[in-house]
Amino acid sequence: MTKRNLEASIDIDAAPNQVWHVVSDLKRLPEWSPQCQRMQLLGRLRDGVYTLNWNRQGRKFWPSASKLVRVEPNQPVAFRTLTNNSVWSFEITPTGTGSRLTERRVVPPHGGGVDGHCQKPYWWGGQLRRRDARRDQDDGGSIFMTGSIASVKGFRSWSVHAASKAVLHAYARVWLSELKDRRIRVNALTPGQVARPIQEQLFDEEAKAHFEALIPRGKMGSPEEIATVALFRASDDSSYVNGMELMVDGGTTAV
Image: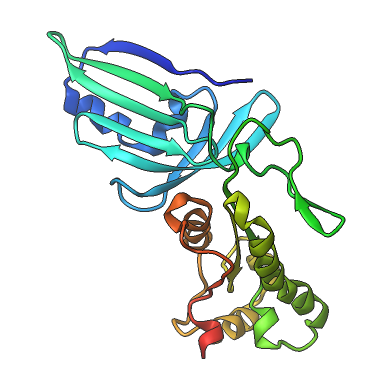
């Protein structure tokens, strides 16, 4: 289904700065969005900062990411959805009785983004192909695979896991050669130790201290620290990065 531009306005009996205080708090977006269940800002409110979003429509749940493209206090805030390049904006204009809030969705011509170019990649006959792709659109996109520092550190008893991850960089180099004419970039993202709630159930203090002793800063990474790099790899901001494996491990593999 082709998405269309949308626009809706509402008059509010409040000053623009009061409306801005609510609209600019993107964590509150689920209060008036029919789909967004959660929006997490990865940094302070300014142009260029990414967000992670969790969406719902009926029984369908899906994650998404966006990038702030316009932030002007007491006026507009706008973000671009990375999967389809649609721009959502909330603009505040003063009125005689308060403020008018206008929400817009602007869809780029012919769609765009990764989901329209390289959907569900899979192996067939040694070539990476597209499945359910839109043939009437230009090629282009970004693929990145998740590696493991076990492939370069040589941890004991991790041979099978390490071997399965070490091959990803080779995949990236080969796919880069095969997909360059279609302007599809291929990279590998290799995270280090990341603190997650389940570790509280699996690790005692001694095990946790052992993992953190491997990290120069002495502290595990957070999911948000990995997510910001993943968003960079998936977006056009990394358009000149291709065929690379990026370690996001706090320097663990460098010492």
